[in-house]
Image 1 (tube, rainbow, N blue to C red):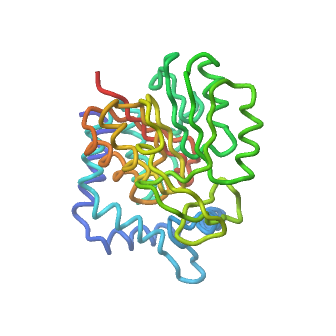
Image 2: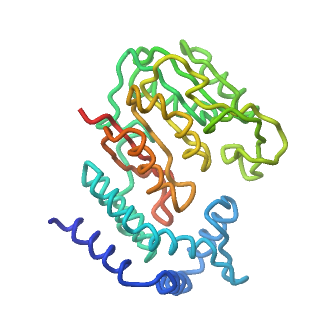
Image 3: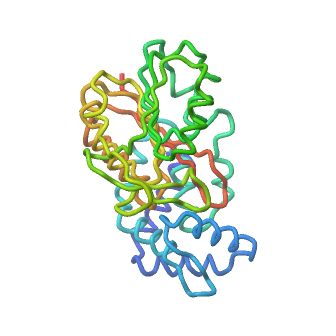
Length: 311
């Protein structure tokens, strides 16, 4: 057992020893001791991205902190399981850093665990594409991930890209940004677990945070990837503001039958970090898992789960 294993086991043992209420009170007390600058930054973030829960000390609102306690206590065994499934110590250290950040506001370990070498999604040690790649980019936004893919691997390292995006303004920029690239098909459809009509909920802070909802301003065609794409796919990337689990269910035939590379955002709530790896493993247990974080140390976001076929 090395230093990272020891620290992770100490954290897990502490969480198992304490009740949910004790964990919450410890998190809350630690938060109250933070500097005004840290509190302002965190409270502004949680106001912008409400899926984490509310946080406003002046109003006595600590929902996001309580959500941390729930996740840490009720899913401690899921985090233990995930730790054993991660295939490198960069991933294991990051998982420890995230959980310790949630628990103790540890920014030092988080800072040393952030990915500084590669663009988000395109870790060259993990993602090694071929000329035959059929890529499904779910949550394409303005094509930023497509642009960095081409920058890292070249224009000839894919056969086709399906780009799914729901925001009209983003789609126009996406079309413009990818107009010189071959075989990119843009689809204005919401990716879910099954075909249905849904709405787009607008986030006033930025279109990248628009979400699928049961109410909203624009009706969308909701589809599943299993029904919308007939051909085999070899890579699926997702960043859809908390709808990743539903979208994965709608990809399960592809995942089960062809084991495509999966690049999945797992940071839009306090559940996806354990829930999405469990879901992938239930669908197809023949995957190796890696974690990378491309966000900031104060509160780790932009966390990506890489699931790669075990060969």
